Amino acid sequence: MRRSSGFDTVWVAQHHFHSEEGGLPSPFVLLAQAAAQTSRIVLATGIITLPLEAPLRVAEDAAVLWLLADGRFELGIGSGGTATSFPPFGLDVADRPTVYSANKATLLRSLRGEVLTSDGGALYPPAPRLIDSLWEATFSAGGAERIGREGHGLMLSRTQPRREYTGHGSVDDQVALVDAHRTALPAGVPPRVMASRSVLVVDTDDEARRWRAQGIARSLPMLAAQGVTVPDGVDDAELAAYLDLHVGTPEQVLATLAADPVLPRATDIVFQPHPVDPPHEVVLRSLELIAAHVAPALGWVTQN
Image: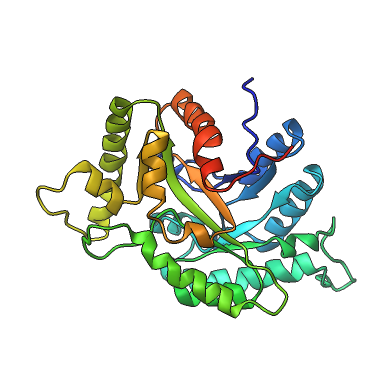
């Protein structure tokens, strides 16, 4: 087993049916196993696709996992996800906002310990502290304002939806989300902003070119689905910047991350190898290089 690199948190996302998006339908099961094999690192979901879940079961599973992890668990939720995943669950994707809102209300009532049954039954085991660390994901400033007003943490995606080719990264648009969230926070509630970023750190320029090209190739179908046409003659470096991909040696990745206006405003930074998705050993090496060179340069201090 490899030596721990000392990261503070590990986040897992929920995706149904589509292996290229991660292929993990049951985050609670995986994190329960992780809880049994770890003692310090905080485990988190980023995200549970709440419209596709029974909210009371989410509350129960989260409460049990919180106990198994000795409090080292934070619940992240969102409306998700791949549109084609909704019909197999008997849902119309157009109803996603309404279902999310209703399911979230039920989830929050449960976590608060409100009475749920006619004979006085409430969530068991109780988990009121999960609300204090609850995270929500959104792509919009309006959503960020609502999340802030409710005192929850704001989860920012590694990239934003696009409508046209601009030649620069989409995460610049997230500054407005952070501002809306912070402005709406109730008095006395500290800001919690998690910025997820696509980062793969390698040792050589040749590796960087290879994996950057793979990340671009795997991202192009996403652009096509959004109706975005990339002009002829755009090189990989410019296209990677437009796609919010940070792939390279430690020095190269730090240079591209330095142009990200959101990171100085974030309280939590999360690195993921998607959409490059190289072999496991390449991801492990990237984690080592992030811990040794990239994260400290961004202000991270190893917790003992």
